[in-house]
Amino acid sequence: MSRGRLVAESRSPTRTEFQRDRDRIVHCTAFRRLAFKSQVFVPSEGDHYRTRLTHTIEVAQIARALARGLRLDDDLAEAIALAHDLGHTPFGHTGEDALAQCMSQFGGFDHNAHALRIVTKLERRYAQFDGLNLSWECLEGIVKHNGPLIGATRPSSRQKPKTPISAHILDFDALFPLELSSYSSAEAQTAAIADDIAYNTHDIDDGLRAGLFDLDDLRAIPFIENILEELDERYPQLDRSRKIHELGRRIITRFVEDALNESAARLTSLDAASAAGIRAATHAVVGLSPKMVEADNSIKGFLFPNMYRAQKVMAVRIKADHVVKKLFGLYLNSPEKLPLEWRPVSDGESETAEAVADYLAGMTDRFALQEYQRHFDLSYVLG
Image 1 (cartoon, rainbow, N blue to C red):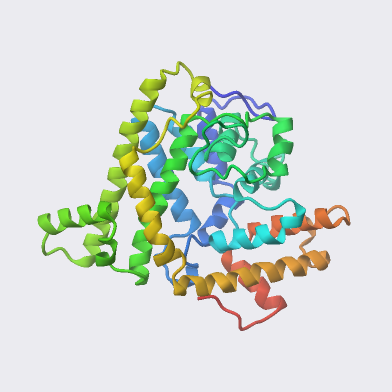
Image 2 (image 1 turned 180 degrees about the vertical axis):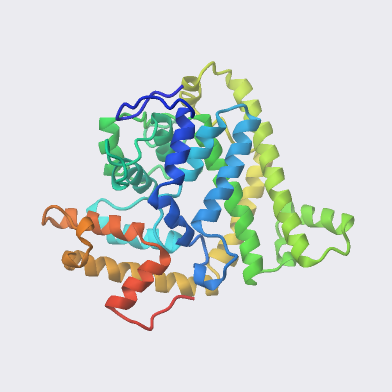
């Protein structure tokens, strides 16, 4: 049962409230754009690297599996997972970092806050309202899947406690309170864990595909070394391609099974009789055991220098940072260059900056590069 929507609607005779949320997310423009937004590698570098869309689909699959295993509402978990990256800019985290720097004097930029802005304002499809008019539970999950935003006694390890809360979130919370000081639903927490599991696994796969490191390099991570030894013993003649796939599926399986066991124990210990009890907890109820937290940290510790800061990736990051900042400056100083529907309604610099951020954040990688080439340098390429 949902707490409802900002704009009241009659119930669907064929779908639950959370199925309806999921369907609206899948059919929105921002979701389609994820197909051409980078995860780590820009799409021009190869057809088989993950994009924001393929990452999102993988997260949704894992979130649904976790929710079903824990007897939660898997439709809600899937909807939150499908929406969790709607607010991402072109060029992955590089684009977000660049846009956050550009917006530093105008309230900053955060992709979770922008996802809320997309689903409550920027999507303009329906006759009755702006946005998608998602359920309270789905909106709460989009905003708080990484943990409470204020007043948490034990913040999530994924949360940035000192990061100011976006004005967009605070303004919407004043209109439709999302209980920012509490944890989110268990379903939203499954989406957060699924995000970690998915990107750890597929970033290893993509890094191997890109030649940034090899299987033997991964043996420095004890958790992965154990899996590789198991594969070597069971399939001594296995070719490299199949070994990489078998490694990936085993990583996902072990993290998912651990999360199911650990989360079930936490839920039993908490003995919450309702979703309100889960939100009132002083810790996340969906999570990993200490042993798997260590494995997770080891994987991230390996990927940061060997993938995210690899020379090949950094070369593209530098160019992408330049593209975003140049386009921001162009539109901020010449808002008449924005399409009519994106131009600010007033002449204030803050209003203009917000309109520019909305427009830039919605761009795909290729459209941002096309706009840069059109205004600055026709020969400029990434990769």
